[in-house]
Image (cartoon, rainbow, N blue to C red; front, side):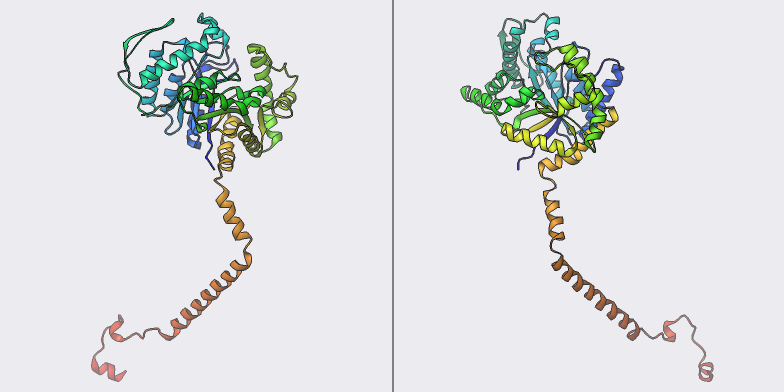
Length: 413
């Protein structure tokens, strides 16, 4: 069975009201925690408005995280390419790759928040074409080419990177929502995919047909794509029982949906405000249209297996980082996923269970073996005891500590 990777995606989605410095430090602590738990990847996004999503430079955040971690891959999730000159993006991702010791993944997108594009004066209709144009240039730069190029929004004159990535082949990843455009772009450049649209019911429903767009586009452009480079986002909060998970996550989920998803973003198709925490959990994690898992490790195992089967398979499942629960319970949730979900999904426990079952179901054989062993032990003990009384060495005067006596005194004695 192919091993499924596990990672985390930090937008972030932090409620307004807490000290930003403490939020940043807690986010860095989370990356460090995930690294110790053995997670494979950590992704961080770029946003410039909305209040809740306040990391403007994923490269700077991930460089700081690199100093606190040792093995976890660090992905820009994502750099919004229309917001930046492609040469500067290439420079920053190279910097991150060296500062992380070759652990960077370059993830890009067209920009997710309309308010960001508005602030920068960018026509939303130009965002995807500009992302496409920028990727082509950045790939050439990272391959060591000297590029001269004149476009509608940037220009390069004999431009070359003086330092290339530490990795021989840095992975490119493209963000995909519900439409085929992200998958099509990934196929054009032979890139990986991070499916952000799977956080919605519509996105989950479309997963079975999504990869076909990437394969079709790759074939058209003479590229290849591999499902192992496909990441799918899911939301979860895990606790020892479903009741405990509901209690921990419900109030924060209510605020997240009502204040941010519905009240701030107001995206088409967004569910109306929830009346209370129970309704928030019920409509988000249970019944028709459920997009999150709020429950036990077994519940998340079942959800991941279901999505794997429906999609046809992918390489890494990425958990969406949120503030539904307290920081302590959030850390505990990620810990439980690492301890119980990861080994169950990847079959790490199969051999151990088979070994235990074999011993438990073959008692007759092992009882005979045990009896034979005990008989041998008893025989050996008896032999040792007999040997102690029959072969004890006699102590001679010359071998003792008693001094030699004069011959006449010895005779008298």
